Image 1 (cartoon, helix red, strand yellow):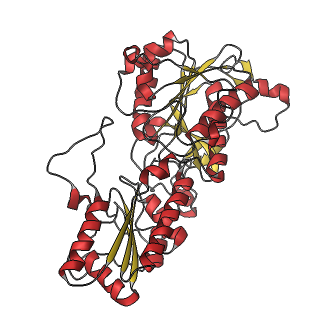
Image 2 (cartoon, one colour; image 1 turned 90 degrees about the vertical axis):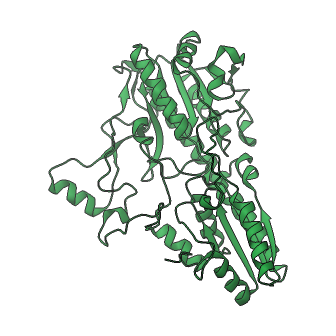
Length: 457
């Protein structure tokens, strides 16, 4: 069985419906800083949508899962529902918050920052919000990076721009130094916008805060363009990424049909998850081969990619190939493992490799082919969010504020089963989300492209 493949799933398995397998062990209890003794300022505004910690959302929703759980005399696994509480932990007139953005850029980061500031100001009357510059290094005195005062005026139009007004960085920083900085700045709430690497740092920050018996909430908002964070239906920026990738695929298709035996090749982001490539393939349905990290493929041989591409050109005269950056790494990975400052393995360039391999192959067999290569990776991640992501970012930011003001900590805000919920960070970092090769999602890709397994065995 290939390294990235998944075992076959029984016909009646609840995993066909549930994103979380039936045997997965997930911690769902949310840590709190203390008793809720402060009346929420939202009560004076006559808000009708308060929730309590007893309001919960099922983790697994399939009938088979619930039947099995009740048969065993157990309570179904559930997440705490997100939303405003009538009683909160922090006095909004005295609380100071900080926001930090870490890792790579992603559409919608500014929207989340703005949503947090607006919810704090208009909802709770909390006006002291600090922006930490350049990721976690912004906490370290040796970098000499001043904080940004995130006033209403400062965030007024930031949602119109891509990237993050706070800038970002990769790499580890001393956890004790980060907590020292929070104490020096008199910060009560830390909002972390990042991916699983950032969340691992968030767990350590929350642990250090707890060890020192400090009352600082750590609330995370999941950010990754690859959509690979565990226990989140979808990360913000993903819809925009798919939309932009689809535009590149459309251009590649135009190039392919504009030349005899034209091949349009598009590389998109996706280090370990092929979600962008798969979703864009499904959305546009002009792709003939979708290559993702989860599904290994052979280049040579009767059933390999080169022979399949050759057949496609002889039959139809053009082809479109979409590849995730993490696909086919066995062909391009060097002998020496090199890591970036965040600890991620630096990938070989599968896009350039396939471009050159396609050209060489058709030249060797004496077949004229025109290969047009498009790599829109940095364009995709740096654009402003589309309208769907804007709405999503607003909800994530607002619910992060509600959780933080209620003293919730060491958690992330997630969208799960169409509801916003609280998920412990320790659960979110247990594993990464991948494209399930046994899912209807991947089946839709195969039915759209018509591609085979591209394996010789």
